[in-house]
Image (cartoon, rainbow, N blue to C red):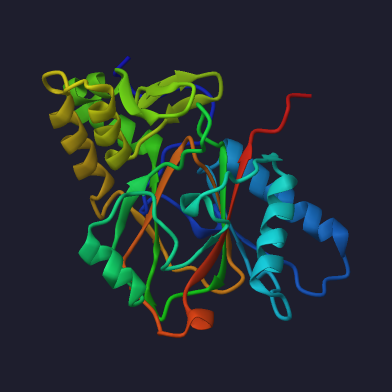
Length: 292
């Protein structure tokens, strides 16, 4: 299937077509509505994830007096109202507190690792998160506990908008992206999946260039003709400034996105030397809520 993506799921958008009111949800402060206002925020976020742009930014959560682990717990509690929170497996890549020292989603050179130790992290291109199971998590939540001194903007891209642009401009590349790629291996399974796939909930995307290239090597499978060029074409669209929404996160901002419909990355950033002052985000993953 290489036509425009139709059916259910988050809609296509670009930065030029996305209104702030579609995705920014202010957190109520000392409102007389109390819990009812909080429920309204959750309802607006849930609607935006399923029927809107596939993302929401809850702005202004109160974090004063909370330590980093307590902020992470706050992030998990909010996500639990939207889906089934997934336990993070052991290992540095699955920490629920993301800092410059935390291993990113891609492997870095020794020089880049040294820069991170010095508080200077480079850009991460748009990608989707993966868990240690066969399926990607549906929901990704990122709570900004401390922003970077400079840089560190979130980069967000609509998978449906990218898909439809490829359908119009390069259907051959899109055809390749509907074929299976190896995404690396687990202890009891191979991760094999297309980049784009039509599923019950709409268009499904799974993409991380590093893990695809590593997975193909681990499987001993060279890329078929045209497949690598298709990934290059996809990379060009994903990094086009007209495609990417840049979001500077503030302290107390909770970014929630459908990890199967919106790709995310971040710009490079620099930070102070003190570990308690560096950029810190709490991360949570969740599956879709059980059908009622």
